[in-house]
Image (cartoon, rainbow, N blue to C red; front, side):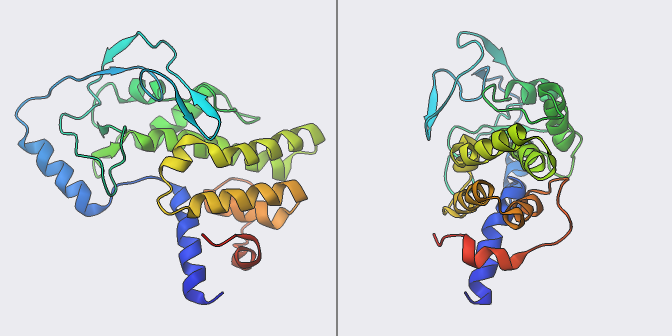
Length: 242
């Protein structure tokens, strides 16, 4: 594999570090928002996927109460059409809204396996802290919150795999790392298949006890158990082309 191909694959893995809008799109969002004279409160269902059930890769999610509605100030008045960076079924969110923490909390995927050493409330606080008080950002897509919940959970299980002395915990972590290939937000933000290719490689590494592969995953996700070695050499023999 030449340097160009390695850079392309590493770039795909780098997309797992977060979901953010590009500068040109942010400029357009801000301009359109300023042009709006009033805010239209839009009715939205509480929950991860809206009314009904979303099935993806065998994984089903549903709102905590499908018949409960909430007017969210966090949902921006201007909603762009899906296409390019704008994903379908992902509202544009105003990060300055006073109900942003409550909105983020309502996005928590209740099916998500919570890793050892943390709690649902702590994960919500972590995602709120990532997004609240960012005047330089202003707006983002709702999918970013769900993505961050998945990323934090995934990283927690990566850390558990690397640090736990309990065989049952390592076995559970191995199972979750495999299941994460089908997590909805990971898949929704994977434009060309590269993210899933890396997730699949990490699952195989966990199953065969390949610490180098899981350390590479820890580096890409910014997990606390990463030992400081980038291990770029691990990509070519282990990540399948896509």
